[in-house]
Structures are given as C-alpha cells and as structure tokens.
Length: 182
Image (cartoon, rainbow, N blue to C red; front, side):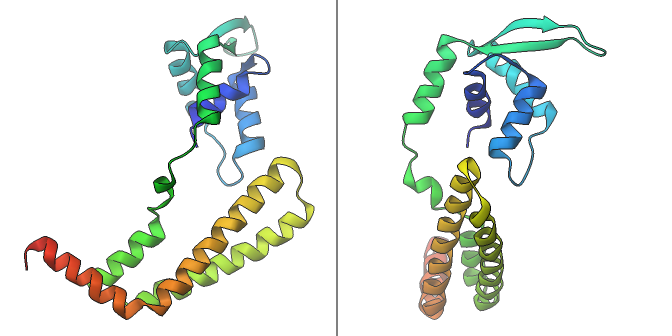
C-alpha cells in the first residue's frame, strides 16, 4: 500500500491537518501499526513539493500553527491512477515465509520445523480473525476477510510444500550448486 497516495486520497473529501490525516489513516488502514506523526508531516511536505497537495490555510493554536492541506487536481489524477491501476500479481510472490523456507532448504535446516510453526501461527491468527469477522463491518470487514483469504492461501502453500520437502530440497540444492558452477 502506498502510504503517500493513501494520505493524498484522504485529503480528497476535504482539506485536513496532519493530525486529522493521521487519525483517519489509523482508523481505516492501520489495524496493526499506526502511522507515525513524523511520517505524516514528511509525506505532506513531499506531496506539496510535488504539486499533489497544497497548503490551504493556517490555524493558530496553543503550539505550532496548524497547517491545513488540500488535494490539487494533479493529486486527484494521481489518486485515480493508483486506485484503478491493477497491481502486478508477481508483487505477492516474494514473502518472508517463502524466503525462510528456501534458505532452510538450501542450508539443510529442518523445513518441517518452519512449516509446523508457521501453520500453528496462521491457524491461531485465523481463529482471532474469525471472531473479529463476526462483529466487523465496513472497512474492518474488508480487511479481515482479505487477511483471512491470504492466510488460507498461505496454509494451502504450507501443506503443499510440506508434502514435497524432499523433492524441493534436492531441486533447490541442485539449483544452488548450478549457480555456483559446481
């Protein structure tokens, strides 16, 4: 997810201060990790520099002046492009789990240990998400079902990989030896 473009999109309905943008971002998109204030203000500075957002007002406060930003026509065009442009499927192909399994296969480490631990972690997270899904609405329902679908796909991959560990280990070690010229 592009944090900058998402923040820009949150400016589209109406101008906002950095604090308000952070609150909106955290409400809609930061289920696991809230956005840092510094990231919001640095991003607003880049958006302004690039002509995608503009300062539209300054409100005095008890501390520093509160700058209000709005989206520019170029910013709206950027959001349109981002929203409607399909994401390349290969961007999902590389994951930490896949990399760890490959490294284990290359090095002779016990892959079963990784797959078993990951399976247990996925199943536990799925139990939590199933409970959340029962109460979720709107954006929370979208993100919960999205995560459940990805966890389900990961579990299928874990099971499939587990049934072929020895064959995969031979193939990956051969590829590693071929790459080294052995």
